[in-house]
Amino acid sequence: MTKSTPTPVTTPPTTSGAVVRHDENDSRYILTLTGETVGLADYWVSGQNMHFTHTEVDPSRRNQGLAGILIEQALNDARTRTDLTVVPDCPYVAHWIDQHAEYQDLLTRGR
Image (cartoon, rainbow, N blue to C red):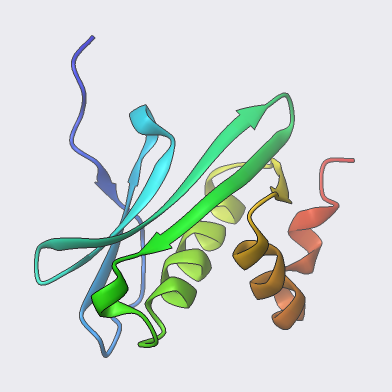
């Protein structure tokens, strides 16, 4: 099977220049900055659930808000592209959703 190029997630321009791409073949969202991969968010789908399992940002790029940009854009994509229930198995994703009430509906939709 040939891997397709990750497709851009529809995102508003960010002041940081960050771009989030969805790599459906590898079940992950990839965050790039000036063409360099600096972060990722892994997920897997089981039935009607989309489990976010791991979020990572390059240690040299931490504390710049990049993980938040990554998760926000990944969740926006999940909201518009699927009707799956988001399961935040990753502690960072769970905390991010707790801090952003407008995304909490993703935890219960489809149930």
